[in-house]
Image (cartoon, rainbow, N blue to C red; front, side):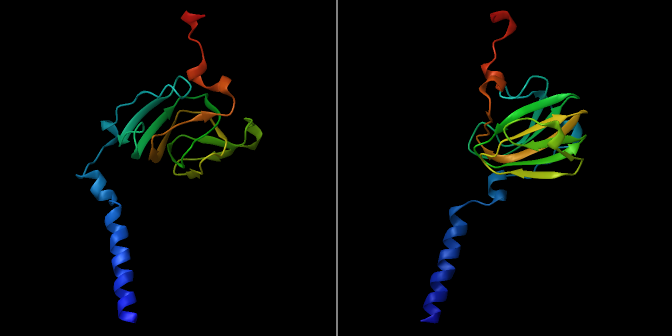
Length: 164
């Protein structure tokens, strides 16, 4: 009986591992990007203007793992928002001031220096201030989305000056 249970347990574990590909299977080949290889372009339209982004791996607009770096200029801010999936953020350079809640309050932010790591569960309202040029890395499962607490803060809802 114990032998039969052990065989069933082993088969179950093997099935679980074969059902979901490993990260190595998803990558396909070894890849190295040096800092000079990164090409920053305008950040997604869902973020306030002024930031730049570089996708290091995957595609944030599609299902699956992605890695993206965001370069925020001095004075940049991201109003209160949330994400439908967990967001993992690492500070590469500069400093990010991260706050929780539906209203941006500079007095209650936590300063994240280079090397800091944050994981934000889905649906948790948060916001960020950048008092100096800062590069953060965002790792997550796509498609990446951002939902602003106040729709007026969403850059996609703002009318371009030429259209006013």
